[in-house]
Length: 165
Image (cartoon, rainbow, N blue to C red; front, side):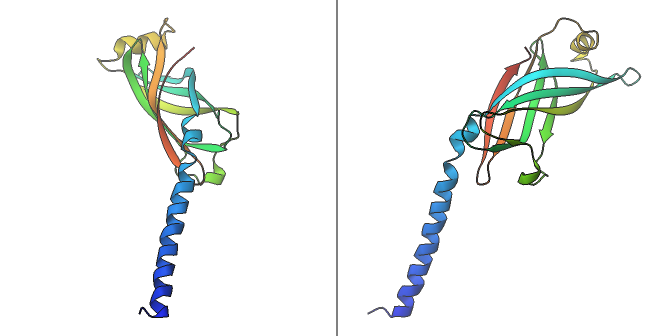
């Protein structure tokens, strides 16, 4: 016969594992809401052109739409900018160092523009597209990357591809 104290210890351990499993299950309920967030490229603007160093400081603006019924935040947007199909540069919007309560909150069905700044240096591989962007030539601009969204319990990463309209 097993002593009562051992049964209590085993029951407590089983209870802790059961609680951990329940917390994990509850946290997975938000994945669909996080992955339903939409991202659109709405603006690419040169804010500073340094012709001496052949570099441009560019502001990239994404419109994030929360299409779910859960409140979410955006932790990070890792992206690459393409001009006329050629990779032009890469950048990142990050709020990962900001606590969840301090970030932009996306309530259900809300849209918020998020801006990111990147510096692009003119090189042999991007010189033609650099000149098109600087001289307002007719170009097609697109972005691809990973959108990281969060709720209190869950973090999800979604790949995206969007064109400037």
